[in-house]
Image 1 (cartoon, rainbow, N blue to C red):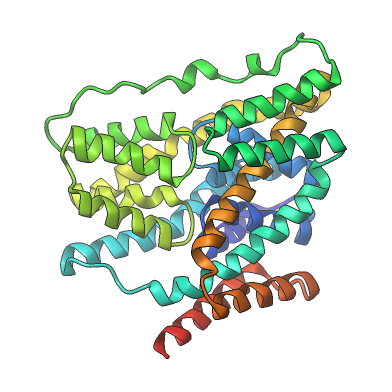
Image 2: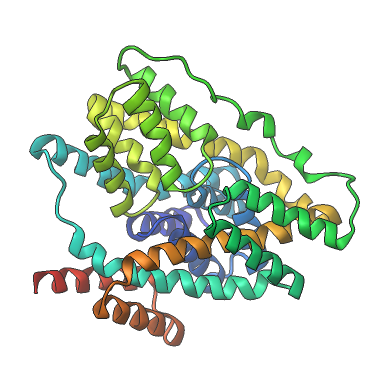
Length: 373
């Protein structure tokens, strides 16, 4: 049995080194829990990834919470989630303190210049390996390709996932009995959709705003930006556009969950107390939703209908990851050094199975040295 200390150490390390957003986090977790430790099979891992796509909140954090519960029950659920969030919370808290003191962000462009190409190699390797497990037939390959095309065309993630699952269900001709949709707490997903205008900034009001966002937000960090701007800049006028962009930049350039953007904003609004309640508010729904849905996952594979639906969602989930990887690659592989870093990272990963943590650290160092030149 996995010890709580082993879970804590793994997710503390991932939380401190997992740059690149949810797709990169998922790839790094797969390497740790499937390849290195054999805690899960690729199929079981994909099922957990798909389960996170069916509920709101930060998908990679929810995956960490799921893995913790799989290994050590409810205690593991809390330990894995808190340890994955903790390092990013502390790093962002330090950056927020520096921002309020000096009015600017530390220079991180050089480090990111080297990290991003390596992250692309890590994600691409995970996509290749997971794809070999998920694409069990020509039809699933076609569904996955269609999901990728739809995602790149701008179709909403939930529509892509639902359509892929439905197409596989129809193709297999399974009946509608015991529909898995009934097993998910869909009514809960609507909670917090409306929020009264808060006139003053208090710890309670900060908690309420971020709890609502964490409870209803599906999609990527770009969707998070839209929610934050609507609530905090336009409706409540707690932040300026510049402050919001700086907060989002911090969430993107630090390791761990992108949702720690909330930590930065909370600190700007009400110091350390604001940072704590904003972080608690935006991440608390993830723990609740995982606790509710985790017991359902084994039923998904025991039902022909649910199994077909999950196979379709699996290939669509990989299509979403592939689309994100393509977008990151376009922005990151911009010259010969970045392309070289991506290729070297892929070779080290595939040929010598170097830990993704060391690859990320080496990429950051290489980027900093190149920036100095």
